[in-house]
Structures are given as structure tokens and as C-alpha cells.
Image 1 (cartoon, helix red, strand yellow):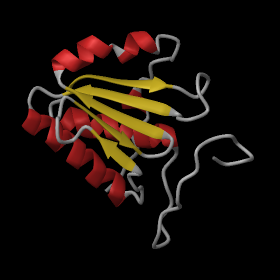
Image 2: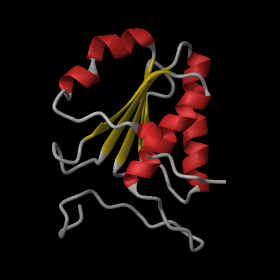
Image 3: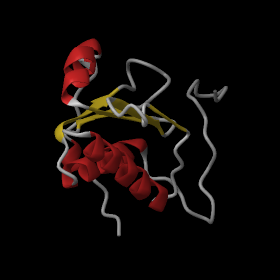
Length: 139
């Protein structure tokens, strides 16, 4: 935890790279999910709700293979931007994979698990972000 902000801290990128702002990184995750045919992509703004994370990215994959692809492609794009995944949970079972990037959490579900846990309902107070408007221009 950062003593000044109360937010979780993570290591800075290496090789002179700087991280994009959390909104742009969350939107980039959503775009990658969309490009790989994820369904029901939602970005929730958690900043007014919890000091732990800025954004949740939620996406649904139709199969174990698609869930793995979404997870791997999102991580690859964020690594290209200098970000580093702090942890990953659920990859083996592939019903709900959670990737922790410090201030951005990426959740990739199968349809049944997404419906059962209904994170959008659990975090109903979190505003939904129009992520398409915030995708950075990265090459």
C-alpha cells in the first residue's frame, strides 16, 4: 500500500517505459477483448467505491480456449505498454480468470460463472465506462 494515496503500489515499468493512465489501460484491455470476440464487455469505474482498484474489466469467453486466448492477449498488450501482471488466478480451471495489474483488474468468465457471480450487480454502484472513448492509440 502506498502510504500517501492508500492505493496498492506496484513496480514501475523498466527500460524507460511509462504506464498509460489506468482508464486508458482498462479501455485497452476491453478493446483487446473485443478484438478477440469476447462478449458482454464492461468496464466499471471503482475509484469512488474502493481504494484498492481503479477499474474492473469484465468479459465473457465462450470456451476454455477463448478464455485462455483473451487472458494471454490482454497480458501481451499490457506488457508491450510496460505493464506487469502482479498475479493471475483461475487460469487452470478457466471458468473465471482474474488478472491483477495493480489498479486494473481483468475478469474473464465463462457464461455460467459470469451469470452466477453477477459482478455488475454486486458492484452496481460503480459507474460503467464508455471504454471505446478512452482507448489509447498504441502501436
